[in-house]
Image (cartoon, rainbow, N blue to C red):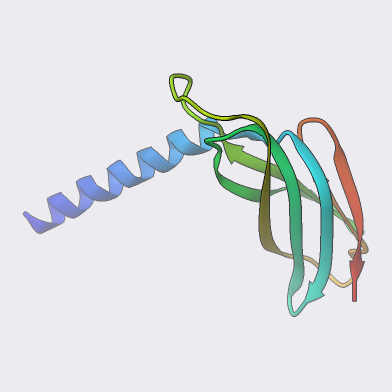
Length: 122
């Protein structure tokens, strides 16, 4: 009985996570990106803006990596279509640590309206 309940709970949680990932969109604008070398990777901080209130789960997602550059997407979940939200540019931010080799010298973060490249601080 417990195993069945646990299995159903895990299934519901994974389905909710899958739906959430499908609904993500790029954050509207990037204002700044800071990339710092840390043990085992690179810590990236991004700040930008969305076009209305109600956005949630802002995050940086690894898109691709090469020998010298890491590319991330700046993503968030938009508000529901029927949700009343404030209209205007509102600040958002996210931080992530990505695994990268010592040869990586730059990080590029992609948003809807622009993209910013930052040199990795060592």
